[in-house]
Length: 447
Ligand code: AMP
Ligand code: MG
Image (cartoon, rainbow, N blue to C red; front, side, top):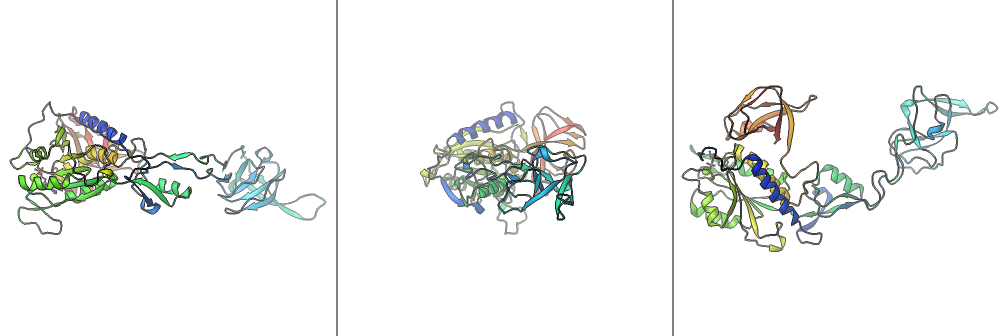
């Protein structure tokens, strides 16, 4: 890990991320159309994490009937007052059809989710009435249940129910194509009667770790060996970005091994290659990529960890050109520095947006934006660094108080997996900053 000192010719973090965002936006414009073979229909209960290929439309008005949001009494708002008893004319539970209409001068007992009777224009909450038996007429011996609004309550027209179609009208577009599917989108699709959804095929993301020292997870490492932990981590990150991970066997630090692995990996939509991108004697990845026909958008960014990051593309050897997600016959490449924390940071910052764009995700969806997820938090300690690189330091942020609070996690550098596993974010220290003060508002990159 000894690539040259920060050089002014390297992109800054902002420049590199702007370039990647523009690249991702270009890929997204090649999204397959609704009749493309790059689309499949899947069961709703398998849809989590996938991306909608067609808009989701309302199959009926939502709600389909004027629906009470409270347990209480449907009424005419102008008739309800703290002085006037209103007779109980009927009762409707959720699931029952309302037998209204509501007679003048009366209320209708109603449960949450039940249709309000015709004529009613508000629902009084159960907690806001006094209920009593009242003689309907002095001459009448029979008593009936009545209610009266409890002081100091008043009720206005439209309170405590949702009018028919207030959320959506039949045929309205509820979600556009490109929406990532989470729990809320699954609930919405279920409410529209969809037992299956049209989604984009996942982009295939090859994960190739390189290094003579790497052994498989199940092996006991020899005295100078380590387990390949990054491939499993990146596979999890690729899945979270809506990609299909494809873990390749580790490539050795030889030209022959790398060439063979790259020839295989070139059938993927995107390649994540880890290790071998620094300036050491056995950092052979860049030359191997050049032999495979790669062109580079950048080969280094002024960030720490992750400075030797490589971003480029190489000719794609597609087995099934019809299913190409990225239109052009190219395989995007990210050469991630080998240390797992560096691989994680550079994936989140740069590779995740490209995977998400290849997956067809729209940049506009609020929950699962295509780019890295940043937030603001209050720093609880002084942090000193050097200027010259944008730094991403493992940190733990608590969200339980009124303001998120963040503190660094102690770590022993970019190979410290235990530190990263104790963290839930990275503290962002801008390039020109050498000190962040306790109590200041800082940016964090969510892990
Ligand atoms: P490199 O970028 O190849 O110089 O690797 C930097 C450091 O990361 C070295 O200590 C490697 O042993 C370590 N490393 C590289 N690849 C992996 C991997 N897949 N899993 C865990 N550690 C790795
Ligand atoms: Mg290496």
